[in-house]
Image (tube, rainbow, N blue to C red; front, top):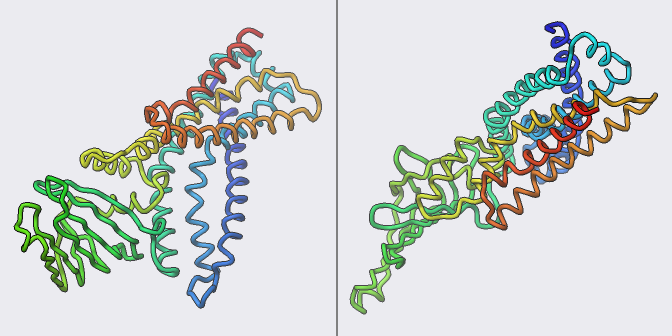
Length: 369
């Protein structure tokens, strides 16, 4: 059995690596074509070598997204090829029963699951952050939309709504606005600064302008007055960290599960909706497990009878199944966010659907036939 297991592992891993390299090369080419118009545009220092490095740093994110599809296609190709050449029939006569084959593929699926988790939670976020900082260094800044990122924090007496326009390549904030409100919701002050940096336990705002408004309980004469002050540096104590601002500015699917969990807890503590980030967090948890579903889905192909050239049809079918899983995973995320579905169920639903489908195919085609 050890020899059979080693044979299956070697064939499947080689096929999955081949499929993954093919997909990554295709995505690398498309990303590079997208970056070519930005090379040297407007006299910028964004050269061809920087564009190649930026596109190369995006490869781990693509690998994380494509891993389940590559596992499915590679495993289907190996199982179908073994069935076509009658090698799998020989393995069955040597003692490779359906349950032993299932356990063998599940062990292999666990290996791909750990690889996908490590790529999506450690390698891809670090590489994506480096890529965006590299591009910001040559093209300007990291931002999202027209107004940047909005965050909220509730402190002991007052609450704050914070707007950060962008992040520089050095990690500093630009175009910062802080709106302070009292416990009754009345606006107390507005603080603006063109630049700010993160410090221990707070932010340091540079060239800050603070506009203060008297409380509603003040007299009419005082209430009509607005006080403005300017400070070269102004320190604002806050628990909003650089990671939280990065999560708000960058795409949540590019962040690690730990960063998403911390930001999700911050939103809940400040009575803000965290539906989108909860769905992305649970997708980070369940998405690597889809590799187990894919290897189970590929096992029935070893029990089919092929004619000459029929293997390409089944491999193409595997490609369609993989694409459908990828699309369904994204569609459930968007619909769950719009319809306010339970986050963990929204993230787990595509995997559960394909698990039932793959186990049904295994039970009908392998055990009954």
